[in-house]
Structures are given as C-alpha cells and as structure tokens.
Length: 402
Image (tube, rainbow, N blue to C red; front, side, top):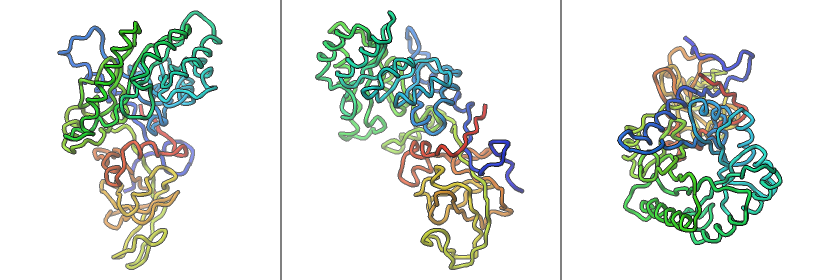
C-alpha cells in the first residue's frame, strides 16, 4: 500500500517538500523557557529568550517561524543581517530583532527605518549609527547591543577597548546601549583540555569587561551569553537572556565527550520541527553487476530494485550521503545508493515489500511513530545538524503544520 502522506499543495508540483511543525516549535520554546527559569531560583523577572531565526530560520523559513515563535511567546529574535531582519519584520513580527553580524556602511538607515537593533562590534560603527539615528529625528534614542570579543577572535570589540568605546558612546546623543553580549567558541566541550577550559575563560573576560563598563557609569542593559550548548549544560552562563539556536528546532549540538549529549537529551526533551520528504518517481530492476548513477559508485551485488526520489543535493539532500545514508520508507530504513545527483537520489528498495511509485521517503524527521533524526544523519557524514537543516533550498516548498 502506498504512503498516505499528502502533497504540500493542491496543484501538482515536483514531489519534494519540507514539513515544519509549529506545534513542535512551540513545545521546544516552552521547554527551553521552563528549563532556564527553574522555580527554585528567585529572580525579579524571568530570563528572556532570544530565538535565533537566521539562515532562513535554520532552513525552516525565517519569517514564518519567527511569526509562530512570537505567538508562542518569544521575547527577542536574532538574525544575521539587515535583509533577514526586514523580511522578519515585514511578516508582521513586532518583538525586538537583533542583527547579530551588524551592518556595513550604508545599511544603517534601513536598519533604523525598520526598527532593527544593531550590534556594534567595532567602535567606529557608533558614528554611522548615531548619524542615521539623528536623520530619523524624534526624541527616542536608537538602541543597540555591544558585542565583546572574549576569545573567539571573530567579531566584537576587544576587552581592552572598553574605555575607548565608552568615550565614543558619550559623543553619540542619539544612541542607547540596551544590551551587551559575547559568543562562546566551545561551550559544548567539557574535556580537561585547553579547549575545554575556553568557555570559563571567555566568561571571566566578559564579566571583567562588563564591570569596567559599569565602573565608567554605563548601564549595559540586557546581558546575554548562552548559546544552545551553554543553555543546556552551563547554567552559570544564563545571565538575563539566552539565545537558543539549533535546540529550538529540535536538536542538541554535539558534545565532547559524547556521553554529555545523552545527558543533555535527558535534561531537555526536544521535538524535531522539520521533516524533509520526497516521493519515488521511478522504479527499475537492476541486474547483478550493473552500476547505478554517476561513475557507477554503486554496483549491484544481487538483483536489485532501485527507487528514484524526486530530490537531490539541489534540494538539500547532502551529497556526502551517497552510499552512506538511509531514508525512512514504509517503516524501514533503506540505503541511499550511488552518487546523489542535483535533482534525484537513488535508494535500494529490494527489501521493502510492495514499494511503488508515489511512496513517500523521509530523508530526515518524523514518519508516524518513527524518527530519523537530522543530527544522526549529520553525524554519519561528519557534519553538524545545522548544515543539513540550512541546506534545504528555496525551491523546496515548506508546509507549515499548526
């Protein structure tokens, strides 16, 4: 019997789609909020949640998931750039949006116009943002967050530049600092190594810089540090707000040592949000000794039944899954065979009784009571979960399940 999965749209289209569960998304947000606000901790106000929706919402659809998360109670959103922020804002999101990698000269006016919160990671950006704020007019200052580089050596002002920043800020009458943060390089590593000690060292540098700012009479606003791994496993980093990324979409990051992942999965129960699916569009019998796909990297060792899926690496099926990965079909894991093409993928359905054209294969995600987790798929090819999720291309329609 063929799969009962429905196509994502009424009109006939190429049969590949991604299902995005708003229910699972809301569950994960609620679980994270509860986790970082334990009842035994007496705080004047609950910790805030800044949901990371950059990279098109980790492939799930940034504007769409942001709107759903706002409805579910998210306090802030994080995007990479001004264009991403504008797309989220234009979808009706009203909560604050932080532009994590800031702006390039010339973008600052658009950023202010759409009420996006800039990140300052170089002191000279203050002048540009202040000028844009002055042109906007009005009595209300434009808010921004300051990023401190505490050892990742990527973006952020050096801890030694705090005094310089304070002097520059004093000249910017149209700006208001409303948050300060840094980003951890190795929060998932707990080994007794230099890398394993890095998070603690970054935290110490951050709070030293924060105290210097306060000593200079500057109110830092919201303090935030914790990314996904730190949220789950380093409660000392939670501060005033946390920034869930991949855990928001149902997956824990990799940990070192590996046992830490099992502990994290027990502590914070998550649900996968996206399921990537495609239908079989062709079936063929291949004799023993015949090759399948480019360069015949798969050669049949027995009479083999090959199913062809209407999706390839141009849709987001990682090319390295060829001859290594599997998909869920009719309740069974079946192997991907041959090199994955841009538009199609071959699977060996020899052992799947009754397999037929039109059957739905789940590349990763949920299929009834079964789950093929994206993080397991990612580990099998030596990459990270976010790489798979973000790879789902724009030509794949998203079906939002409420």
